[in-house]
Image (cartoon, rainbow, N blue to C red):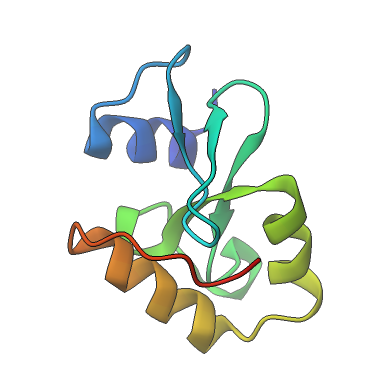
Length: 91
């Protein structure tokens, strides 16, 4: 398992077989099948594996994060999620 995934699971006390939320649409998916941990700032651009830079996304929203959603919007969504609040941002 990659370091950023371990960090994310540890931060939220999630097991590898648990379900968790896409931070964008708030749908629940199995950790090991349906969710992906996304680097808001890519490692190739100096991003870290820290929880402040990694967010859980379903496949649909992970693709959108790479293609059409600005990093600033992804960071806003993630910061909101980290405060313990839950809100549907994207459909």
